[in-house]
Length: 179
Image (cartoon, rainbow, N blue to C red; front, side, top):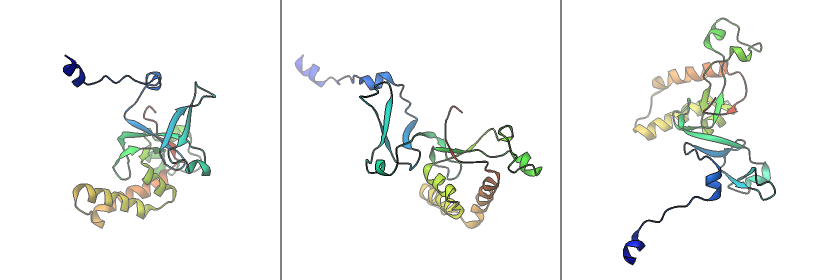
């Protein structure tokens, strides 16, 4: 009897923090400023609120951590990899083709589906490094399939990126799967 009991797998009892929060395994927390990993914890001074700090504490010196969620099941519209962190709102095609696109675009003119981006692609978009964005896609495809896309195969993607650049209506926003 003692031996059987010793070989039984132990049940994991959740910590009070696990019981207090809903855990969504499809997302993970990152810093919205630098994209670094963050740690959430309960501060003794305000136990009802979670505090957020960088996993690499040296980053806390340069800026406070800003919590955003990475949605692992959502693909990046630029490289095709999983892990959307940011979304970019764009004007619908009909406003671009009718010549109405410009500073007068209102919230009602926005497209229903924003473009999503992983942290790496979002950094390239913010730097307007369109060649780097194409290279990132080509590298991911090469790693995944072992075949390097040709410039002819990348041309439609380059066109889509140029269209995105013209239709983009503002700053990136943290991606929210419920929105």
